[in-house]
Amino acid sequence: MNAHTRSSADLIHDQAVEWVLRLEEGDLSIPEREQYEAWQRADPRHAEAISKLTQAARYFDLPRQMGIEADTLLQKLEKSTSRRKLLRNMAVLAGMGVGAGWLVHREALEPNLGADFRTATGERRSYRLPDQSLITLNARSVADMAFDSRERLVRLRAGMLMADVAHDGQRPFVIRTLHGSVRALGTEFQVRLLPNETEVVVVSSKVEIRTHTGATCQVQAGERVRFTASSTETPRKTQDGEMAWLNGYYVALDTPLTDVIEALRPYRRGIIRLDPAVASLRVSAAFPLDDTDQALDSLASTMPVEVQRYTPYLVTVSAR
Image 1 (cartoon, rainbow, N blue to C red):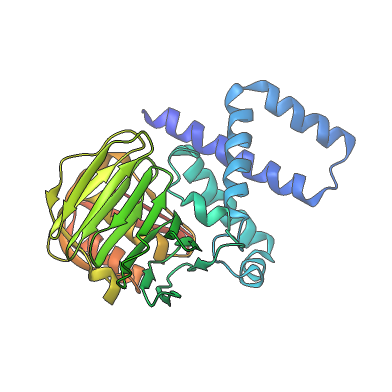
Image 2 (cartoon, rainbow, N blue to C red):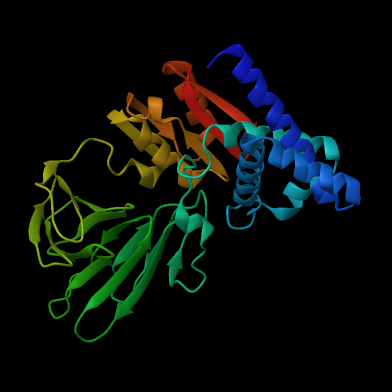
């Protein structure tokens, strides 16, 4: 992109910000409204900039769902200068590609208020079940329980949990996700729901996986496996630090940067955007989950990446 194109894009972004601010004030005269409509028609990029900016604003104007106190947000936006600065930052992000580029937990935007078990942003919580089994939910996780005389069933609807299963010779203990079920044949195992698959890590004894289409797989202690609704992968050995999240840490061992950001996101209020250009960088380090600013600063100091904080709730990680 040449300098002329860049300055032209910046000008369009600035104009779009000003028009959005004026539209929000709601007191445009008829000539001003006609001027705005003429500006949009003058260049396809004008309408595109408005569309992207308003889309970005819709993502940001979900403070409650994203764990942001509404009063805090409103205080920051009381002054028009603050609102203008925020919108300019959104324009920058919109130019980077709003939509697929936003790395937002869908479950964070769709609260599961009726769930039996749930954790908020940055929260880990353990629950003792009626059979004395113990489940520990990672941040932004949601689960339901359905125990009867035949089965002890836990439905994992979002996030990740660790299960320490109490013995019951009459009723199997099963964790079900949208991809299939994990039946305990022992005691401790971890289940994580991902967008397109489910991951299982077995700490002791073994589990049996059954996909929705009937494919099965047994996973032994010290093994991990991912499965979809129709297939399972071959079990692999677990790595050190798989359970470190229980103690507030994420351990990366030659791990893609995208996995590190994925682990941090449930612990940070707001949005983290990862530039696809650096998503595959390999990382080996331990990061504090309860202090995501420290974790992000550590990435910036040890990796060829730049962390930009547009507001406390909008962060990007891109190539330096």
